[in-house]
Image 1 (cartoon, rainbow over the protein chains, first blue to last red):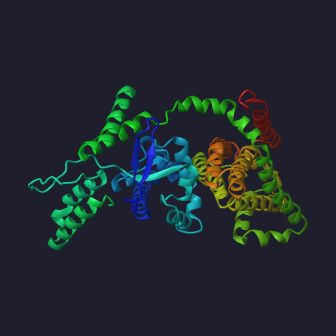
Image 2 (cartoon, rainbow over the protein chains, first blue to last red):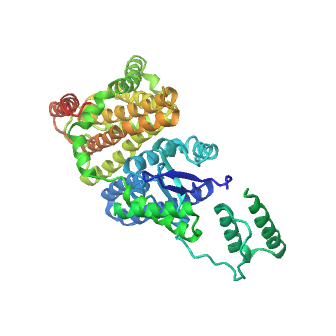
Image 3 (cartoon, each protein chain N blue to C red):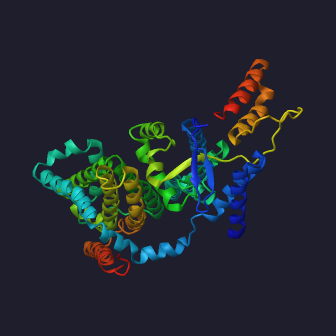
Length: 210
Length: 288
């Protein structure tokens, strides 16, 4: 359990919410999608504006400016921390206290993108993400934001049918969770691994040390 | 809503405490999370806050950060004056600073006609004005935002932007005066100088402050110090963006006109006084 990158946040109601910070690859992928979308958007504006001469060029330059600096800010603030790319990959941005991202935080983290890009191809941002245990780039650190996986909607467990055998010792919650998630995955595992997993799950569960 | 949310939190706490089924706990957890998202969305009143900021908060903010603004001014004006002096004394020094092609282009732009001929010097048609408007917005405001972000590189990015622009502007100004195009040049730039240079200086000041808070975080941890500083200068950045927007408007639609030089000078002085008056006199009540 401790191997997971998990951030627990205590709300004012003293309830803990669990967040899963997203690493470099999914974020890079989301950024890639966003970049392509931005280019498509620019292309979309460029084509009609070519036909109205200098005025069109002017409008095009203004829209490039807006798209370049405000595309992520707009989506993050209006669509609860999700740019289209992040939505597709299943990520969202939050303030680091777990609340939805605010306008000022969004502006700061996106305006500082230039520093993350420095000197080339997001090198500083990458270093920052790799050395930070919550995978935050420089802009995230300064803005106090965090990129997390969106929680999938609670799903019913699909446990293989079997005769329930009550254990003769109480299982801790973590153990229960492990066993259930193992049961869920067990369909896709090979026979030997299923057996090994069953053994380990039960025995070390008894020690309460999983 | 808050009532029901509290209820939900209580349910989750009980379910966790008594070790109820995982399915239930997970479902409650997700409900609490979405409830939390809705309840703690930083709420806006954004237009009101913006108006309030424009009405004086900006000026008050600027006065509170006066030393950064002064430092930023120094970093841009210093190289500017040095370049002016050097290139007035040794005109060929310009070729060290700016590429020859750019110089010739500049010469042609401002020296196409006789400097005293108001008939047809640098007047453009209106579509062209729009094109330049777009260009000034794209180019200048991007420079300003980058000057802020450059602060995160220990302020070096900001210092580079300021000094580089200072050198560039000083060199061009001196060059155009050298070749006798001074009249055209001043007629063009005076109107928007106050807003444009002002905007760049202010965004430079934000970058410098950010850089300094990284180098000297004081009693805070570095991330915290950066966080506080970035929040505190955010208004100034947006303000400088707006100033550059105004500058772009003036530069595109007023500066290229061929009004007599005294009128252009008066326009420049007017905008300068307007800006100074705003920064000095408004927002006294905002100061805190």
